[in-house]
Length: 449
Image 1 (cartoon, one colour):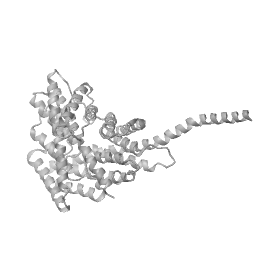
Image 2 (cartoon, one colour; image 1 turned 30 degrees about the vertical axis):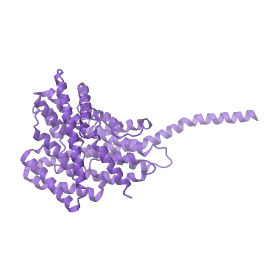
Image 3 (cartoon, helix red, strand yellow; image 1 turned 60 degrees about the vertical axis):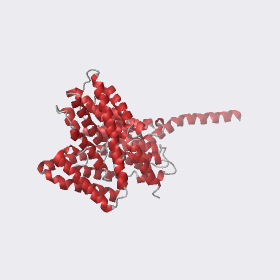
Image 4 (cartoon, helix red, strand yellow; image 1 turned 90 degrees about the horizontal axis):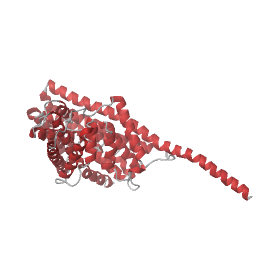
């Protein structure tokens, strides 16, 4: 009897040992398939979104080259339509999209989990694309990178809701965070930037619980985008050289100015948003028309660098001999996002911040009498510094610019610029732009019941 019992127990243990690897493989597959599928879709949508943005900016310039006066009709009308699309279809699609994702991650708890759909959904994703493209077509200084993060977060959130209840799966929090990282990686073709951004800006939980999913999602989304667009760099291969210790002074001065100006821009945006909260529909429409006419007037009579995402300006400064950017250009590249972001339409601030930083760097390059590759180093430092002033994520900013340009030889200069600008930005505001917006979205969702 005892011998028979021992045999049965022994066989049972053997069966468990044999089944264990099978169950583990099944669990891994069930957890991985949704991530892989969502990442593939994110990569494809990021490619389509990139092309739409390119077409919108190209059509804008074609129209203005035909009849420049048309901007006085096009810009106010586009601002109004972009706002109307958001108001009618999905109010949570307004603005950048990054604060909404941060708020959704905070709300991913048993108490508030059912409310995430108010910040992330397929409806919001579609609205985000339409509104931001219309905004850009009208000359709005908006980017697609923040919106891509909310779009990716929405796709991952929806995919998570489709997973069968019987499947083994990761948390909503991990899913959304991974989607956001994949979105940034696909938007900029910067896989390391996506991972670092997830850990530096978004993560409030330990990434070890889903690090494999995070890395695989970033890789799949990035490879999908590359399969269609090719192994592109967002800003190409600018010539960059750091000669002598004197260049450190230029990098440091550029970083201080860029970090402070980035923080000031965000503070102005937030104050204007607070001022506009009491607006009724009539006042809002009048404000949108006035904003459009202001941008049109600035572009027509003064400097058309106020228009668009600013990528054309960055390419011009980095890849031509004309490295100069006067205070007029710096002012326009800061004013553009302030006006555009306060329309209530969809549109990100990543690319406009980089363009503003590039103009700051070019101004300092002229001040220090630097040219060619030395001037490019200050331009890249300005981009890192201004983006850090906005996001307060110094490592993400440095790595993004590094991956956009493939200039590994100046990585330490970019890191120095990031750290200095982060300290300088604290003089204006202790909190990041996205963190302050996130609090508003969390309160809005919680108090909406």
